[in-house]
Image 1 (cartoon, rainbow, N blue to C red):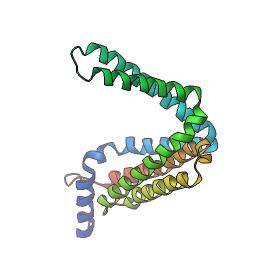
Image 2 (cartoon, rainbow, N blue to C red):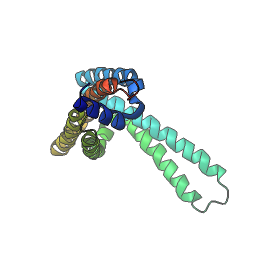
Image 3 (cartoon, rainbow, N blue to C red):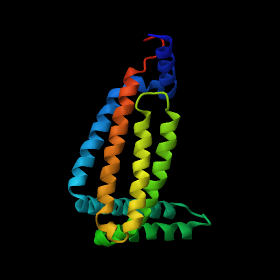
Length: 195
């Protein structure tokens, strides 16, 4: 290895830590994300409804756990508020399950904000990995998430019927590509003793 290659390898090892030892799992995860994203893109309305049903089930489960927990908390001054919050979780979950399409329309606003924030975080993460091969894929994944979030806002409320499924699928694809790129970089990053 040349001196420049040694410096690049040392930087990659410093940034990626022990990821070199588990790069195969990251690669497999990236491939799965791409497969799930491709399947989701081919049926965005169904993916939107499935996402809403999934979130509905999670909200009900969280509400029930909080409800049970609040009855165990004797003497807690905020018990009434905790009970009300848990009931709201259950009601929201039931609404999502009973009317996934209507819930999706409103949920798109949340998704737009989520994709925008996640996009910014991915860009920062990508720039922190500068110096390793493929770092720009993470930045590109962040930029695409920001663009998707803006597109939801522009076409809302119609976007509520297809956007969640389509954009989550695209985000899965981009994140899968990012993971694969990171896995290749981790595979090539060898600690000094192994280099």
